[in-house]
Amino acid sequence: MKNLLYIGNKLSKHGVTPTTIEILGPLLEREGFTVSYASSQKNIYFRMIDMLWSVFQNRKVDAVLIDTYSTTNFWYAFVASQLCRLLKLKYIPILHGGNLPFRLKNNPKICNMIFNHSYHNVSPSNYLLEKFREQGFNNLIHIPNGIEIENYPFEERKKASPDLLWVRSFAKIYNPLMAVAVFSTIKKKYPEATLCMVGPEKDGSLLGAKQKAKDLKLEVLFTGKLSKQDWINLSKEYAVFINTTHFDNMPVSVIEAMSLGLAVVSTNVGGIPYLLENKKEGLLVQDNNVDEMVSAIEKIIENSDLFLNLTRQARVKAESFDWESVKHIWIATLK
Image (cartoon, rainbow, N blue to C red; front, side):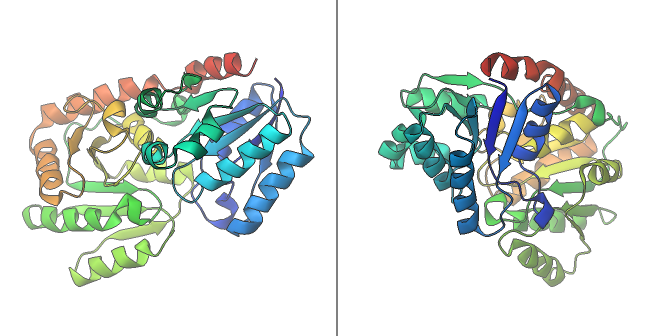
């Protein structure tokens, strides 16, 4: 299967953080696949129409890849997959949504219509692989999110400073307010502490985070969306990466932080414990527990051996996601 149509949110030109369609698609093209894309439409309704039209227009492709999320974008996957069925097109959902297990339980008929009729269901995480198997799905393949590890130089710091980095879109499900609250407490013990929050606005949460920082009289650096290279360069000024999300699957931003030598402290939600082994590759805390995250960060700052061990082991894990390894699974899947 050399000719592919990729359905997903290709919205970086509108200031949105690039999603898998803009990372995996070009990597597949580099391996010799011909890939068409939909959609770059900003309006959600026009985007759905564009996706459906693209499926119809490209009905002679060998397969359709469909980025599959768990909230509003779940419905794109549903309608696109059903049109593929109508046109007798092979389609492959790529399972991203950290809350997809909720969909499996609460929308079983719709999920069966999508996932029972697919050519394959690709899960980047062992978390969703396990949850889908529990619901009786068998046509599953585990293919991790691939990164080009050579683009992520490992910066070994001898000890951790109280300099915190947060990278994500500003959305309620990623809980940016927790990052500000954590920083407020850290600042009391370490007056020299800094917090940088990188990412675009999504649902008003950026304004909320800025207001909370202002109310707490905190100086937080909000950069907005940065290019990949810009935030990689920026990461050299920080030591601890905090991931505050309520739901998650296998976030590329966390894998990138692991690659770069940052110590990761994350909420223990969704696929995170399948990505990070607690106390070996990062420290995991309960969802929305500010005190627990503060305590974890303090342990890293105060214990240089812990910091070095976490960052070195995290880099080893991140190297297993290198595209040079992952690509062979994709090529075999798309034969």
